[in-house]
Picture 1 (cartoon, rainbow, N blue to C red):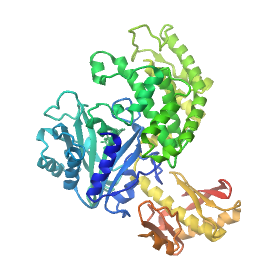
Picture 2 (cartoon, rainbow, N blue to C red):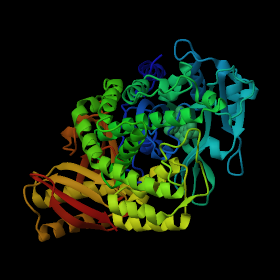
Picture 3 (cartoon, rainbow, N blue to C red):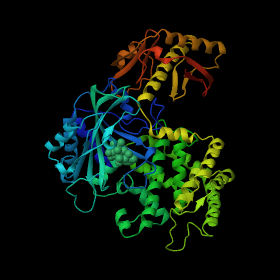
Picture 4 (tube, helix red, strand yellow):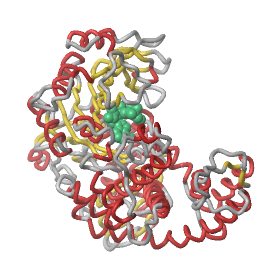
Length: 623
Ligand code: ATP
Ligand code: MG
């Protein structure tokens, strides 16, 4: 069974159970400044999990593109990827644990669906602590469905609890499903520490709200939120023991084999390790990292809201992924244009389902090519210089050509961070890449001088690396509010612009992050200081008036009749959400929004500039 079949079956199964199929959202989150990427199927659904009505109903199912930069250090194993697809089903205050678990098991084991062996399944549930009681209900349901007691394990919050991401917010216990991937038959007892038990699916039961006092109160709307990894699932169904052998990776791996003239190997990681062939696994990891990173880069660049490599935010992540792919490519003797054939393979694999990357194929290839050209020379010269440092430390040896059988690992030889910084200054090779290379060569760093070097490069590079890193993990609760406020501010701004400048003004784009909002609109000329002041004043007046923001769902036709502003692109069928702020602003919009205008604080325009012909851009903040 291949990935296409699993994807289709999942959507079909839950459709039969009354779920509406919703499309994958963009990888770049809409109006959520706290995370760089969509990290789970539930992410675009947060407002609805918080109680807002979803136009498609109370039962939803999707296959969502995800990027997890937080897992980057784990990429190289069999089952963690930067880009992966998450299959998920949701109950928004509708069905509860019994149905959710029953359906999970039915989908996994019924011959009509995945047909996995029940004997190879194990599950975990929340064992309870001082905050919330043991999730007996879940355990009982699994037992009643015929899962053996020894295969059910109660675990702590660390493993079986979801949220809240912020100080307060919805949260609850979850139950995880594992499948045995070992070549021998599954042990009677489930040991969560044995990594041959692969986690494939997670059902989260949002039933509490953690309040300001840290107390877990029962939620009025209880939700089910599930997430199943497509790659892992395809791998276990086919007994592959390695996601990279599934149809969503294997053609890329084969292409790397071809280009490098090296083999990925046919044994499992564990078999190589048992035979003392660690170097096989090390080489294989490079294959995996290259395949993973190029795929993630293709999806980020090719997204509907895609970005190119740059030094900040999502762009920086793309840059980092490509640079790592290039560098690991070098260690397999892959140079020059080796990423182009890998991009083509990726698009061959996914292009029919994710048409956006197919449509942007040439563009993606171009963007990557430019990045490779820019980076290759830097990397070559940087590595040469690093080899000199290495040679001085290890008596003139070449790290990539060590005498046979010699392995240098974690040894006491410490590299002076200032030397790495000098390489950065001379050739532009980023410190983190030098660090990675040296670590691969088995050298350690002197912490003190390394830290000094990093601080120095931070100011030199202007990279918001730490800022981006902080956003890798991401929270929901606090951010939700912030972005909702900015979102409402864009509505007030549009209405004020039309009042001051005229009815030719339409929204052309908007972008919100933690510090500011950016709003593009149609208007032929630069705004005067007077106009800007007037616009700002109108918005602040409306904020002071403390007007409620009223949300209503209605058919698209009705919204048009009521002269609602908005982009008439209906994502979820005919019903659309509308937000009305008295007579002042009426827009079709996905939300989320503040409840009342007074929540916005003070609105301040900080910049007005051109954004292409006939389009102006305003940057503003809420104080
Ligand atoms: P793990 O503990 O294995 O990292 P997780 O607890 O982070 O998984 P969830 O956040 O519960 O996973 O995500 C739901 C499902 O998505 C998981 O059961 C798994 O199948 C899949 N998944 C999560 N992270 C990744 C990843 N980096 N690559 C591939 N699949 C993933
Ligand atoms: Mg994880």
